[in-house]
Amino acid sequence: MSPPLQALLWDVDGTLAETERDGHRRAFNRAFADAGIPLHWDRELYGELLQVTGGRERITAGLTQLRGEVPAADEVEALQRAKQQHYAALVEAGELSLRPGVAEMITAAAGAGLRQAIVTTSGRPAVEALARRCLGDLAEAFELWVCGDDVQRKKPDPEGYRQALERLDLPAAAAVAIEDSGNGLQAAVGAGLTCVITLSHYGRRELLATFPLATAVVEGLGADGRVARGPACGGGGVTLSYLQQLQAGAF
Ligand SMILES: [Mg+2]
Image (cartoon, rainbow, N blue to C red):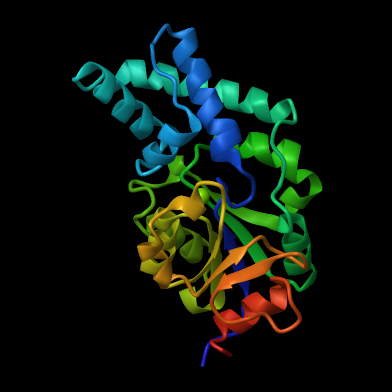
């Protein structure tokens, strides 16, 4: 018997907004261009690079592939800083927005007294920029952010989720994670969480082999959401009550 659902743990990139395709990817490219580095990640190539989680790690992988040797740590650090500034500028310019149904779900969960946290591999500056511009007042619904800087091992390692549960003082059985990628799913399941995958631009092209671990795979959240795989949602849409039933194992 599961305890009642007490918390939603949210991934950021691809889950709250299409940040990877429209934000991070372009910010990396601007940082490379500024530094005179002949690297440009198009939508397709960037999809493959998403296998490498973390900005510094992705820059290191790109430069290593370009030059045939691992770049110096200070070069990676400088590029990562420049990339973070470009990302913040893109977000501030209003080029990113929340995915459909996200605001609806955050509001419904807050209204039902659920606790909410962010568990992301992104650095804190990127999350702050997004929270300020895209979440607005909804940011108050999140009592905790576990960012890439807060963990030793990034997703697919479950450390971030374990840390969030520990800081919320909740058992995994009392929470649901919302993710869009195989790496995120593995991290959530590794921490013992029920995980719902909300398919994003890049998430939908990932190996379906990882998704059976998800309790459900959905296309969007809220009244207009649709279940792509998993138990059907009674009233249609992908509502908070649907997440509550998934977590309770009611299906
Ligand atoms: Mg993601």
